[in-house]
Length: 176
Image 1 (cartoon, rainbow, N blue to C red):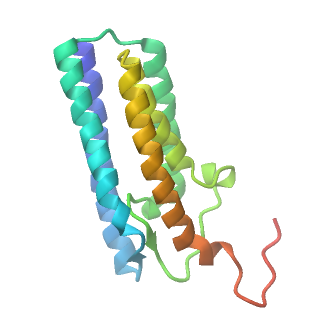
Image 2 (tube, rainbow, N blue to C red; image 1 turned 135 degrees about the vertical axis):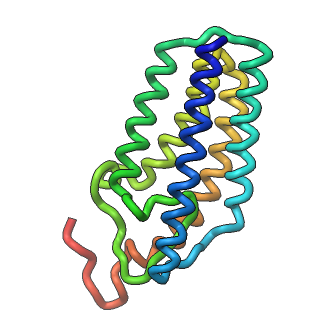
């Protein structure tokens, strides 16, 4: 049981630190002239992640499942990817869609290979952590809910960033 509580404590602490960093970065981006787009889905993301984590706490404490170390290792690999993503975005990493006029998209790190690597990691986290506790049903339910919210989020983000991906009218697109 101590391992279960330790794992969830570390995940909870990580989420709280990430929220602090995201809030700090959001304030900095707005101070630089940034503005938020697509905020109508944000409360759903917060609610989904909160219910997911609280539900895990409840089930892990009251069911005391056995931890699968290979799945915990897979989760740690995802966390390393998350670190790479946050490092690539630096002060631009936030949980909101903030556009700063005049800035270009990040094309380094995982963004060199994937358009939405952070959402790939989030989808993996939402699914893999419950599986690590043997809760496949929980992983499937929240995985599907998360995919629905991510579909909404990605559409909003793509629309918000569209001007940064497409050259102004009359200009040639940058060479690949």
